[in-house]
Length: 163
Image (cartoon, rainbow, N blue to C red; front, side, top):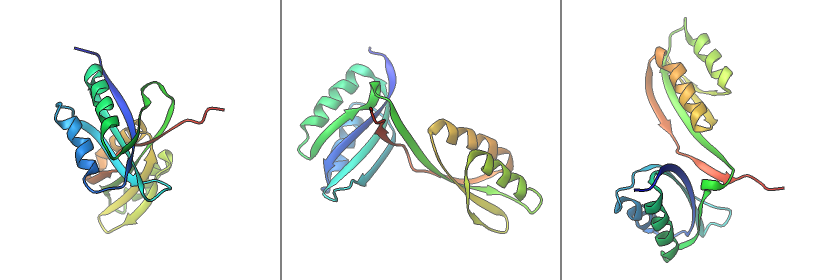
């Protein structure tokens, strides 16, 4: 059995129905759990970019990448394993709040560079864009206030520019 590492994989595909199902099917048929998956159009509306984060056996993942390249709708597959990347995730989080602790919650948000998305009578909804570790830390800091709901986008990634 090979080593287990986390991989961020970028896949450019033709923007056709069923492509996501075929791509995710390659992972699930081999028992791979996808940690994060995002899909959106690129600068070309006929092309989509999927960013998939997975962790598992290196040799099996290598086989999956080879099979991804053979799918008819796939244009390009990049496993960012050995490349420096910029990776971001979006978090929306609704936290219990009262008049007495709202200022403290917003102070914590400011420390992380988070913004206030909405304020209601008994809660405040915050938004943060950042790396996974930063978002994880932010969620941990807010737990004592009572988290009502979290929504995370999953990672998007791009290779760092090589100058």
